[in-house]
Image (cartoon, rainbow, N blue to C red; front, top):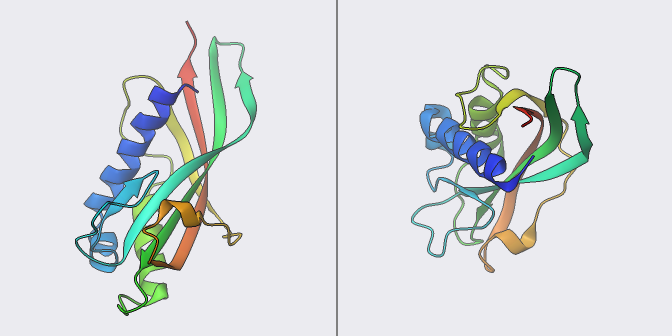
Amino acid sequence: MSAFVLDDVAKLVGDRCTASATFTQAIPGGTFYGRAPDAPTSYPYAVFWFERRGEPQRLTDVSSFQTYTLRMAAYCPPSVSGQSPGDVQGGMDDAITANPTVWNAMPAGKVLHCLAEPFDGKFAKELRQSQDIFVVGGQWLMALGQQLP
């Protein structure tokens, strides 16, 4: 998958988070792709990123698919209690895993499915504001597909 497809998927992830009332209530600071906001307006906030899993798989019908791990981590400054970790995790789950095979269309490619996985504890400290601490995280297996030229 090329970078433009991941940018499209990132927009879909952000849209799903914004559309989920459970997410926006538990994570009022919003969600950000690739790095924390320069000046968070509210806490906690969530940062998400993708990690490629293996090589693209080419199919006989002139299409391909690629799997990724979608990781999301919520952060809050030490001085702010924020939401409970369970509520934050529930917001992430509601936004991402509701209807795991029904995602909006993208200009190139599509999300085939997005399934929750047990969180392995990895989070990217460099993607948060330096003073903020990790609250909770989640991860999902995403399969992306696209037609080949």
